Amino acid sequence: MSTDSTAPATPTRTDYGRIVVGVDGSDASKDALRWAHRQATYTGSELVAVGVWSYVTMSYPTMSGYVPTVNDIDLEGDTRALLEQVVKEVLDGAPVRLVVTEGHPAEVLTRFSESADLVVLGCRGHGGFVGALVGSVSQHVVSHASCPVVVVRHPKEPHR
Image: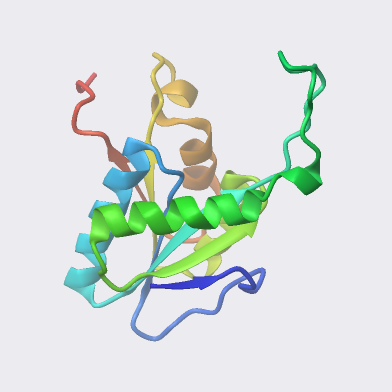
């Protein structure tokens, strides 16, 4: 497992294929990681797990009155640690390249689709309309990706 936080804005394509999977620590993203790993093993593709972080602004005081500053929070480090933990838990040492980058998940994963043969995402939506049923990130990537996208439904969710 290698971590690459200096990945180029648009990664380069490999000859043997690349599967990109978005990982945020949710059960849905763990399911997507498992599915992507099986597919990568079957096709001999490189598996790239992507963790995305962004600065969050707070416009309200916390209960303690303390609002942490950007300097107090290591969002990139926290995202990297979460990604490493999830990959270790789900894949137990299987080969995977880890990429941690800043941005909006939908935009980052759409950008990564430009050099991928497949993008795999989890499905977390809970509503009755398409945006909530699929999820806004998945919906955006499905609509704008440069390659096929698989949205893996969590097995505990009933089919509608």
